[in-house]
Image (tube, rainbow, N blue to C red; front, side):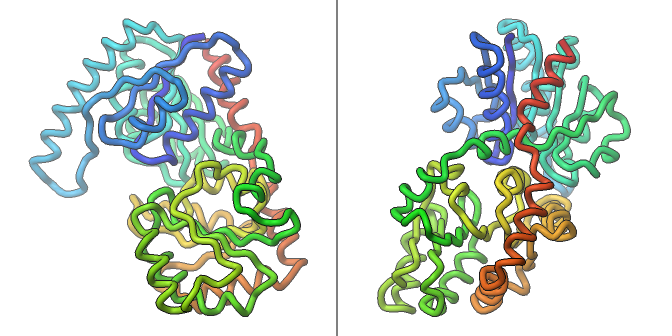
Length: 366
């Protein structure tokens, strides 16, 4: 089988595509791939590291206001379609899959116009602009949230698969996670992450909360700042506490996040869709702080979906502080029955078989 993958801008679009590639390679040894991404997105650095051939096109997203930049974006889209058609004719894929981000717009549209079977995968509870546009042209739409099937009324077929990233995380080794962190396997780990690039609001809350951590020596806090925030955050915490609390590890980035998640007792993070797929696959209780700086406020909608199911607590940014975050952590970690309940609720939402279901849909199209 020959497969073209597209999607990018952030890890939330890239990692599901890579999870599908991994599942295809497992089920169909000798499967060949081509990843078409953007010149500016993370995919240009992440994908080649996976030994997947990568081609870049020049594309940008639409601005929400009337702007001359939007005219340039239309021109880039049309050029991207022409370039994508050329790449698709040369590679001759059996199927094309797009996992979101504006880069997959011209790629998947070109595939549809060439009559190549195509799928888009929507990670969020509220669909993005690109996937809403593409849904009218593709062979099938795969969704991560069961109640978002109705968001694609013009689609030929919508199938609930979950997020393929869940499959990658579900198989992670907990022991390797503890080893990475240098912690005993009996540790209760509270993992705080602000996303792959970090989050200023979460950083500020953690700096404020740091002096309180000495009151909870039974918990091991692991805080992943994002590389750009690391030095300033460590300096700010030391200014407040003298030395880092013994039960706090501050890291700029975690390269084996699936293993670290596998050994986590409670997660604090944003509410990006790929991240939620990861934690529900493992059944990790969560405190979610949705980013307000996203299209259609989709992160809050993602977070509320878990909250309604009893799998998460939600703190909105205006309510976030060191003391408010510490109070919710203590509430969850101080109540074993609540932890078990949240974990069970989370696991019921998980779809660890998601990548397999997407590959099944690809097979159905062929």
